[in-house]
Length: 430
Image (cartoon, rainbow, N blue to C red):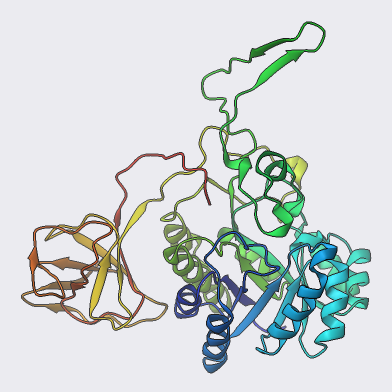
């Protein structure tokens, strides 16, 4: 079996480039029409997506186009046009979710490989065989599947590629089959417009239909009111187990609407895990150090290595979102000479440098600042905050539009970070 593919989310052209720079072999994304991120407002235009495909192919990488929404009858004519338009861009595969769309893609664009979305909820050999017979070359299995079941599917269908999620948000419902957002706001999850209602805090009430009595249920402190809030998936510590199985062709990271730093950090962590596995040097603490720096809802290894009925720790009941161990303080510009501030920065602050995978950093000490190494990590300390417009600033804050000069060039899309000081938050959005 070939080396496993690392597949990262690409919500924008910039995130696509960042994912590749930080170690991804392939990315997935789409123009918002018929994609499950249609409401995000962050995905590609056709022009950006075409540029993304060219960029990926120029680096020997792959890009998979999402056409994984659930269309209504009134949209079928537009869907056909969309499939043909996307096929003309020559992505490396379509990701589709329904049997009808799978069949339609196969008819209209037989040259494009078809990957079946996790929304189809394939968990067994019988369902996998049906979709293979319909033209699927890869199945993105249900998040609820076990590693043992993947082994059984591969045994029966050895030519079928299997893709599994290893990191990111977990849905409250089976593979996204949720109606809560539809009921509360009219936004349909399986048509790309989920409002993430499961992340909200709820109050519990009891009603007596005979008397019309309604009263609020008091909860014990610590029980929590985020009753549908699933923790985030994190399988970095189980990558050796997953790859030892020999049946997984691609490991996938969720998060097209998440930050550029998230795209970078997850790609880098899982790139290290995969490369270390093949080198016989697996070290889960190294990967978790990076992943713990991200905002998260608490982490779980979910169901791939444990059955659902064995788990009682997959929900965060008393908060919706918490800060990670680090705060992003800056992002280096594409020319590598400056950075844009993302968090309050003062002269002589020590900023950890998070560079693209295998990047080489030049250590310097000059009038602007110093770049130095300590305990295996590289840091930046600015002696002065020199803006591109020539002004020397006392401090810079998030939202500052003046690029700040670096003491020496850093690789494009390098991030700067500091240890977090803020405690747990409650932002319900992804």
